[in-house]
Amino acid sequence: MFRGTITAIITPFRKDGSIDEEALRRLVTFQEENGADAIVPCGSTGESATLSFDEHLRVVGIVVDQVKRAKVIAGAGSNSTSEAISLSRRSEAAGADGILSISPYYNKPTQEGIFRHYKAITESISVPLIVYNIPGRTASNITADTLLRIAELPGIAGVKEASGNLEQIQRILDGRPKGFSVLSGDDPLTYEMMRMGADGTISVASNCVPARISKMVSHCLSGKMNDALAVHTELSPLFAALFCETNPIPIKYIMAKMGYGSGTLRLPLTELTEKNRAAVDSVMKSIGL
Image (cartoon, rainbow, N blue to C red):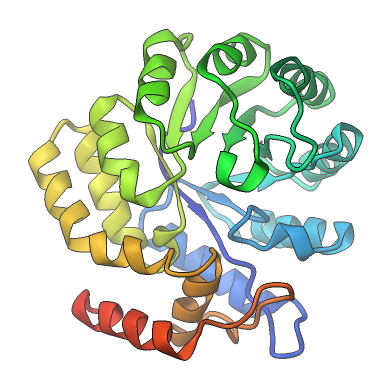
């Protein structure tokens, strides 16, 4: 079972837009030294949509090479099932311990199409697969009924749930098979989801505050909910700031100020606006970043 603090890391770029391998390696070490249980390269936060296949696999390979303890769960989704299978297979060959696979976007498949998509992928790889449900990016929701059906497939290890629908999430928690992980995909809801019984988070915020996210998650897993709530409350301004513009625009700004990459994004993403820079700077100062 995947559980605990899992960081969806940024892909640091140099000013010319190329991958900054040195910064990426330091970021992986920073995560491990501050309690991350696993690392997700090439997710939405890692700007997978604008990485070429070769770049994607290079990033996965760098992270696999750099880790000493943490598991590597490679983002390897696509709105083309055949492409998702190819990327998943190649990520497995690069050494990933698992795959995070977003539900097909843009196509707006039926629930049966979503089920068959994941069935085809998991039949093509031997490492565990985590389903990623984020209707805000895909334009389609994986319903609780469909997710629980997918959960019974061999090789399906869990779900990153970012629907924001707590009623749906509770149905998944109540009906999931043994060993199936439910992970928060939305930092502001991690505390509430873990209070409901979730197993951890795949977090954007843990890029910059991995020790504090790890502490909050550890408290939740230990049943120390008041202590976890205190950390959640402390970090709530950060959670809001990270989504003042499209992710990963704000977190890349923060990580650049912390020395991880130049903050460069690839179009169509653009740099954080001056107004929001001031707001993010204020939040960083208030929480000691």
